[in-house]
Amino acid sequence: MVKCAECGFIAARNLYTRQIEEVEKEYRDTGASPTKPFPDGIEMMSINGIRNVYGLPICFARAFPMEEEIVTSASSKDNGIITVINRERQCPYFVKWQQGFTPKEHREMLDRQLMLDYQTK
Image (tube, rainbow, N blue to C red; front, top):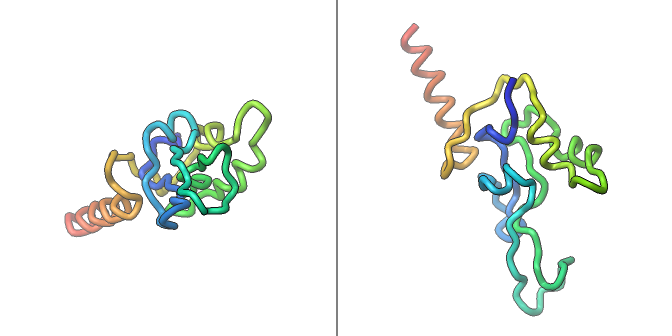
């Protein structure tokens, strides 16, 4: 059994650049998105001029509908993120997270390993 929090395919959309990015260790441990101040003149929903950098986490491999699971798991005590990403699962796409590598780079590492295994056979 594996956990999404330990997988290289857990990702989130950066709400500023709209890119899908690797989520940081703190996000994996706490479920709390990094924050950054909004520049003046931008009218978006924020609390005291601060807004989350990431949206909800997603599975880059699309193995599980994490966004839906998070919404249904959310409670007054928990935003649902930490509960969902630490759930034990049977996942055929799991690849151990290596800090600093994007989900796309994790996919490329997995593809390279599969190709090497195939060539060895």
